[in-house]
Image (cartoon, rainbow, N blue to C red; front, side, top):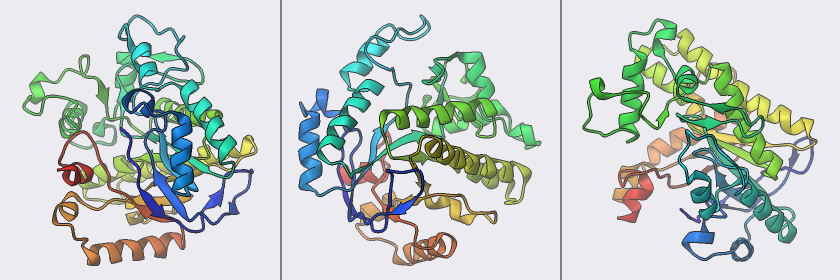
Length: 342
């Protein structure tokens, strides 16, 4: 999917050195992914560069989105547990790290000062996956061990039920299926436990691989969603499950910064603005995002009171951090962009 959206964004930082330096970016463009057009639109990277130049883009948001496992290149050989044509299918879609690296080289050759933001999800671990840095493969039993289990904190909700409900919400299973029919050995993905050290390393590897390919910023989808859901279940924002999940999410941000600094490059990290509600030390984020609701899109009218309150809360906690909105989407027409498309 390719979507472009121009957004005003002032005071963003430069990704060209190991310490944060202010940089005035006037235009951000949402373009996911910059290599998708090779098969869907017959659009070359050169065409993408022309679009970015025409729109005077200074920041490419979600220019690379790693949702499911991404091969290094077309020659990568996967274990037999993976679909036979998996690498071939990814390559056809322009979805290999080689595609990303080559696209970034071309884009930055033509627009040297552009800031390119990749993206990773904190809300999914596919049942079969691998670490793109170490090349360690993980199979069903190992990834299921990384899946969130609320009973870890004594919460009265079984791992199976939580995973089933989340999978049903995200259409990873038949929405008409029952809990009894849920089988972790057959589903494609789970909601991971961000406090699990093995998953932390895996999540970081997805970010590091993109940084090695040349991205300047990382946006993490649903980074604080575990804390949010456990807060919803316990109704206690100080519950150990909530606090530990929040702190684990903050740790991911810090470790991405640390890795970038070790490479002599400041990497900007962003996520959704939902993190503002927690009464803990604020995370070391560099930018925040928000989306209008599906109802706001349907009615073509923003809830100004809600947005004023949200912006005020962000400014009170994060000061003048860059904060921008885009119309979010997922796999159904019930999402904001899905409603807009109708």
